Amino acid sequence: MDYLEQLLRQWYEYQGYFVRSDLWVGLQSDGTYDCELDIVAFHPVRRHVVHIEPSYELLASKDTEQHFQTKFDAGKKYLHRLFGLEDHLHIEQYALIVGRQNVHWHTIGGGRIVMLSDFLSDILQRLSGFGIANSMIPEQWPLILTLQWVSEYRGQIAPLLGGQPESTGASPPAR
Image 1 (cartoon, rainbow, N blue to C red):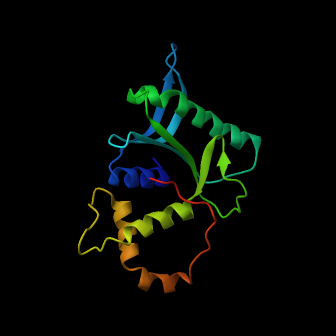
Image 2 (cartoon, rainbow, N blue to C red; image 1 turned 30 degrees about the horizontal axis):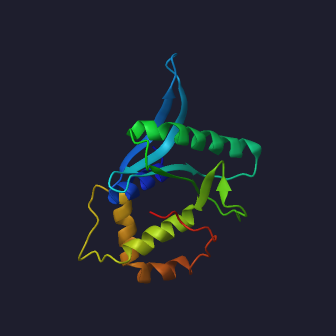
């Protein structure tokens, strides 16, 4: 599992979701599968499923569009059955993209595009309401705990970074 998948897994687990990574769906009679889904998170109380496909690049090409379309279509086809919840199951799908590209569109392959910078900003904003002294993130989520420390000491860290980066304009996913 790569860094982005670990970050997504920990963030959604921290919020009370059950998370599966590298989930193979669509078992065929010959033992092969239709597709592998990178991250699937299920919140049993909200009956909410999040299917995320992280990517280190977003290229404007038919191959990239088809890649995400295949994964998001498989998620729509199989996730209802996986959780045994045909009715009232909301599936949110997005591509988490790393990069400095100026993205002029908001969807790819039927899922929303969320830039990593916006996702991290959302996490840091949510963690800024928790002081380390009052509510430290448990050690089972070390990446989220690290972000909590960064949020706690942002005043000392920000000058070292030379200012605030600009937002890409894409809003992070609602949870």
